[in-house]
Amino acid sequence: MKLESVTKTFGNSEAVIDLSLKIPKGEIYGLMGANGSGKTTTLKLIVGLLQPDTGEIWVNGVNRLEHAAEARKLLGYAPEAPYLYDYLSGEDYLRFVGQIRGLDNRALVREVDDLLKFFRLDRDKNELIRNYSYGMKKKISMASALIADPDFLILDEPVEGLDIFMVKALKKRLLRLKDAGKTILLASHVVPLLTEICDRIGILRRGKLIREIKSETFHNAENPVLLEMLYEEAIAQAELAIP
Ligand SMILES: Nc1ncnc2c1ncn2[C@@H]1O[C@H](COP(=O)(O)OP(=O)(O)OP(=O)(O)O)[C@@H](O)[C@H]1O
Ligand SMILES: [Mg+2]
Image (cartoon, rainbow, N blue to C red; front, side):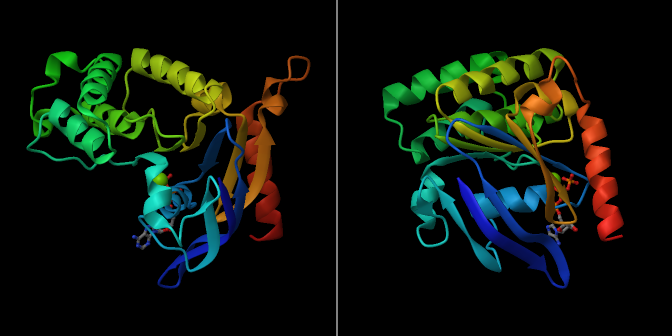
């Protein structure tokens, strides 16, 4: 997955500025940065919910802007705030998404079943989504990103609102997907998530990528460095350059 000099402005505010990212197959890449630094905008540009002003985006060699539908098929996306259908049950919603993603009936039943179990929603699968708690909605949204096993996952605040067991299970699952060759781009404020599963972390500040950190830097057994420290240092340096 590749972004080249992507810029996105809203009116006269610049949300993403000249952003270039290259994420090889089988990597988990985490975006971090202050509220409003451009993480969600970046993810929306990749999945096609927003169009960049300038720049290019490729997903598996497919140009996202020229072949939007083809690129979209390769992606599973879980947005920051889950937008779902209130009057469908969790199970029906997942079936609906699986059908759109082209699963045949047998695969659909199997995958929806597996995801409902994994997300511990099997007891509530027939309840309407409007009656779900926030975390339950977030789980359905995550499940819909995983359905049909897409090669690229775009996850916005994936563990926000999830309970402790769920976070642990999800981290494990994402690492398994990575081992199976999937490429994952996520945005999060949750330091343990970033440090435990990401191969690289990019720090955004006011729409600009100011630093990329490899996991070796904070997993270095002899000289461990806290991600918070690296983050604060990167921000302080950027502030000196452009206050
Ligand atoms: N639809 C929109 N219209 C106008 N401005 C927007 C829109 N979406 C985002 N922005 C602006 O773009 C900037 C980046 O927002 P974005 O949602 O990408 O931040 P973020 O890094 O995801 O923040 P958070 O950590 O709070 O989720 C902000 O200044 C925001 O106000
Ligand atoms: Mg956001």
